[in-house]
Image (cartoon, rainbow, N blue to C red):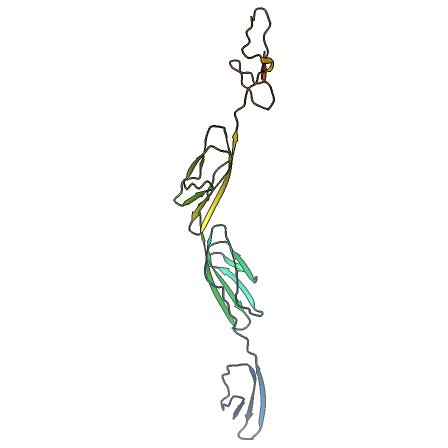
Length: 239
């Protein structure tokens, strides 16, 4: 005969739903001899894994994934459907599109898991190219490249190509839904050089049969590149 406490049952085994000490008294009906045994049942709380909502990010962005529930202890295991095993840290940083899975085990058959999908949206990268320079009075063209997305320049233009006649810094932002990319270019405007002759020798005439020659010289007040015609000299003076 079996007598259980605190659960009342005459059977040799019982089903329990909570932790605690359970005592059974076993009696031999022929001899009336009995024996008692106590078994302790430890109830391990069922772990909870909650990764939150799915994430839609822009190219270049990332999101930190972690269990939103405060479980004490247990073994963590991160993995991605495409990326495979990702370690056992408290959190991970997702930079690629994938379905991320977190499994938590606290021992025995007490396991839990959750999944979250991270989608990284590619975006066209705008490129204005290298910095440009032009001479005063002229114009320079800046091209953001062909795109079907919205463009916004710092000069309020929304065109793919702009033409500017002033030096400065120009930037454009490409907008694709909640994602964007931008680039900046520096445009330098140069003034035309002014030529000043030394010794007021502009318009000189000379009889080359009587003298060896005349020195023509430009005042070298700033650093320029020189090109004389027709002889091709590149210094600031010629003979």
